Image 1: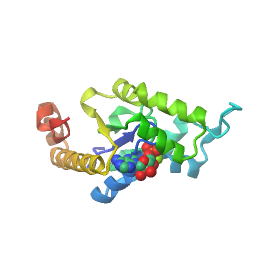
Image 2: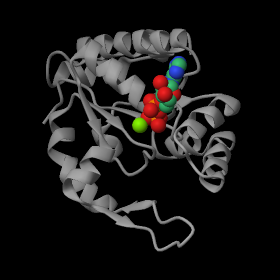
Image 3: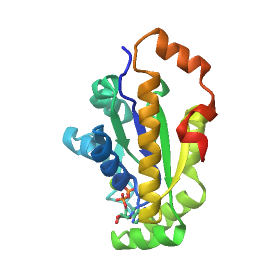
Length: 199
Ligand SMILES: Nc1ncnc2c1ncn2[C@@H]1O[C@H](COP(=O)(O)OP(=O)(O)O)[C@@H](O)[C@H]1O
Ligand SMILES: [Mg+2]
């Protein structure tokens, strides 16, 4: 079945601004904010880590998670909010946004969440080493992956406008099922795509 609304992943290190972006995007576009933290809680699919230093970390069974959200992804129009991305099948995903932010700012944001030093450091390393960007680039086609800086409100507004424009274009390209969608995929160049014009 062809989707009439795209599925978009908003990923990145904890604290970069995923949820803030997803909420704003859902509000502006009417697409559904699929908060994976909520899915994990609702279906009780997070196992507590055995690491005595890290008793709060939940390990999520990815197969069970995919079973839980398969129908929604098939339907389309999902804005997926999660700090990992390579578990979602590329055939189900249309755009992957990796939200980024300066480390000093990230430190302050995580400190506000009362993260302990170890967890703080792990997340700072994750951001510095571009772990999520790398993961996204390995799992998806380069054209599908975009970095979004999220340090100021202006960044946020700009990002949301960019993704909104991308969604509009995607819907135009995929408006009529079948041959039109296939044609536009085949003929599409990066420069035709609002997401990549200024990236
Ligand atoms: N672009 C931004 N400008 C200002 N504050 C931001 C921005 N992005 C995120 N924040 C703030 O950073 C904190 C973490 O954002 P959140 O969306 O919860 O991150 P995540 O979902 O990635 O863990 C929140 O307090 C949020 O208001
Ligand atoms: Mg969040």
